Image 1 (tube, rainbow, N blue to C red):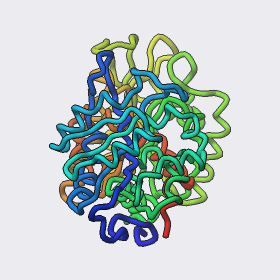
Image 2: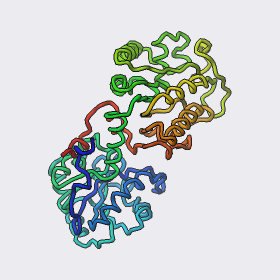
Image 3: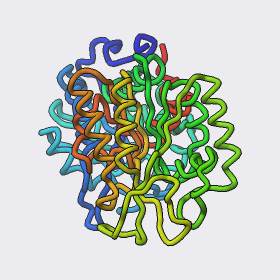
Image 4: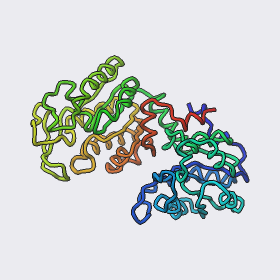
Length: 404
């Protein structure tokens, strides 16, 4: 439960104090350094505004890209200043370092209605190494430390763990929301609990599947990884010429299915598939039952109406949904049909108060945005790797360190 974590409600009077906020401002950017999606900026704004309303001087830090310990303009956080100012409606002063005298002078010169944004943490290798001395230098200017970057919480980086230990600290509102939503969905869910998991390969989601079959009541396996489970369950028409089946993972898939059965977890696999001769938008396609999948010349790109109906019926029976991964090749029409249809149904159930729906992971968020329902789920996680590791049942260093 959230009572075991330190939140901003535990920080006391912040008036006049310097609060260092670890945000995730690692936003997508085009070749002209224009931000193409401001979601991560927008979602950390409530934390910044609340800190300012409490009279704090806010110093924002973040990583950006993969500069590997070297400063370069391509990975400079200076590019996001206009978008951060627009989102906050406040002046943002940028400092081209994150430790040292420049930072100390800038903090001393801060006005109460300004935000300070420091340069990319990853310009220093010590950040990724979790270096304690770097963390001490980082927080030297701060009275209080707030960690709001759940999406980086699976990394024991200096700003995520060591820095938290150096000052009175707490979760920001975004991290609090993330943890609350995920605990509500997996750790303490209202049952029945259903998970939809997609992806191209079983091998990339082994830990996830092994954890989920012990926790959920129903597990929908979709995307390319479903092909391996279909083969393992005796669908002989699936082969390497027409699908993404991983023949070396057949025994593993059988083991996962056996574990599911032992834990009373119902696995839901496709009943029909949409196949095409070409991998391109609006290619010739048809829907076939599993026994009629051609041996070669056609590829499995989506699931059909029978499968959509089956999944939607399962959703009707459940109270909580966790979703990671699309049902088909959602980037190409019409092979986004199943993902769109199931997402729309989950959104309807959510709006009716019948389902708590939580989704996360880059492809999943894109797929739900494509379906036009990203704002209709109970919660959409900003995290990729951290969301997956949480679903895998792993402890996240950046969350654990914030326990009381």
